[in-house]
Image (cartoon, rainbow, N blue to C red; front, top):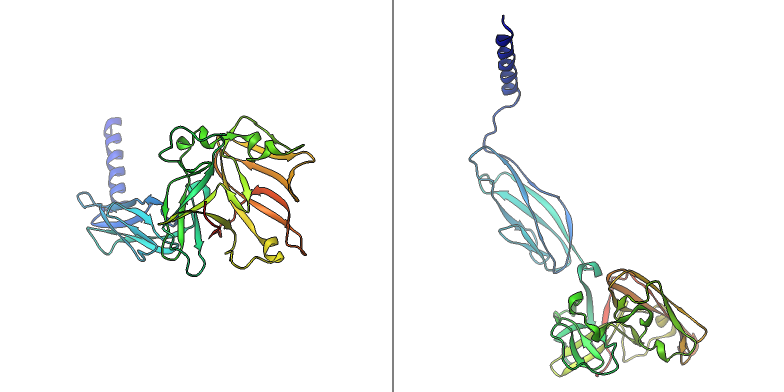
Length: 336
């Protein structure tokens, strides 16, 4: 037998064996949601993709459904919209064969700073004015009002500015959004070595920054923390206390409650920078001030921790540090 005939016979044998070992695909074989189970921050959206294995000429499209639309909805294109905390099962079903489907568990969680927002709950006293909205509050770093108010970061009443306005649900839940970096102008920015708004008013106290010229949003503390939250009613704006548990501002907190209290604030940094306070005069009144934070580029969550005199309940010390708290409550403080 010639070499050519032998080669052709071998190729034919391989083809026959391959055909016998790989039966032809008929109908829809399987549906798979690529990536499987996942977590999504509330108010976020995410596109799900379904991979369909089917015979040639069989439709590879799917229909989508969610077992709990109070947690997340899904549209015909597979885009999941997270609307409430909890867990739902999202299913992709073949349109050509309804017996073939796949499901993924979608868990909706609180947004983090990395998601561009934070979730909080408004606390209002009985008989208080209904709240209609909330926004991140910011301080001007300038010594005089700017000539033109900003569109996305808006001057409220100098030196207060606010970010995007968010609604407050009937149960008090709100999603406060951070302004985009492109909307933060010189009106609300300073340098890292001036992170604390009143640092220049202190004698023998300064801030040491690893990169002093990095732009940041300044912080201040007057029991409300700024940046913080500004609440809105139909009558105007109300500064608020942003804390790790609900505060009843009608009944003064006890020393034990104050010792457990942290007040949240959020700082934008144009680059990575560490900031610490130095000097013997870092205090205002009877309260010592200590700042020790590591800021990453973008928005950062920080918290004020308090030292409290157990007898007088006076605040004797303030510490500004990094924070990963997720239980956030907002209580009306007063009016501007």
